[in-house]
Length: 342
Image (cartoon, rainbow, N blue to C red; front, side, top):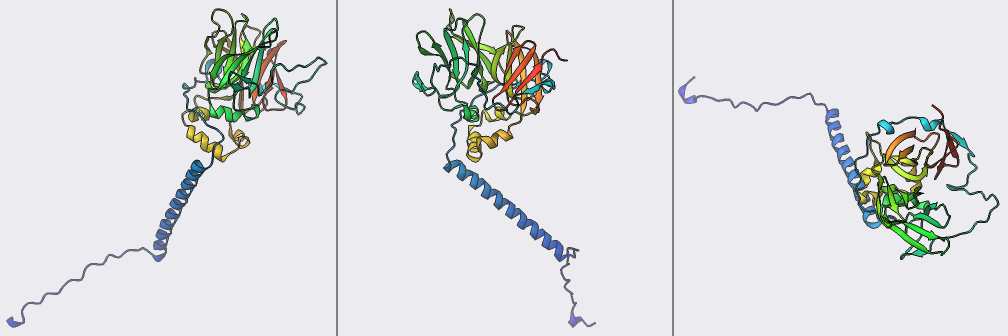
């Protein structure tokens, strides 16, 4: 090689990376991207739709935020059992309503009319009643000035403190407000001293004692607080305590929807914009609980029917001759439980 020719350099080609990716694989990768984009678009559309519903549609309820204590653990006296499933059903499919009445021949007189205005508000949901021994005075709960009995779920979810306890004097026919600002006052029971009544404040999962006569008249304190369920009616037991019925519980351990929603009124609004009361009732877990509460708010014993298979939607328990007769605000029957059973 002569010198004039110089030295030759060969430029190397850039290395090629060879992969085994097939066209089908590349196609799958692009399909996955399309799927993710479609899914995100669908999610965005649903969020937009919910936002439109939330902003445009009116909610039938105007809920308030409130606080509940952490539910008590269901152990000890509250330990779940199947005792209520030993009950028998009476008059099944023969009852026409939650409080069916049979006139045995006496005269029926209306003392207080629904819709009547008292203290600047109408009586919309007259609920339970207690009568003094001499029959002169009646104490009753007006659960809401806005909702009626058929709208009970609206009342529970709205949770406004517009419930009251009223007194009716049968001699003077005077109607007065005894206590107000209660969240769904429900069952009422006169105490033996005839000077105070127990009132189930359903939304707050507690029972209040309202003083209607004597030195403490006009006052109120708590008989039992933070129940493991939402109390309905209250009736005396033969041992000196009180039977309390609960158609929904606050499971601990577990999850309580009503406790969760208590601080989220906007979620309640959205739920009632999307679903009717009948649809929502089907989604509410059924759990029947009847407890005997001693003076001082101590639980003595409790009877359970998880899922409400035999006694569903319990609202009242009435003791008579060793048996417990259990009513319902929704079921077309009465259940009876032998208290002498195992």
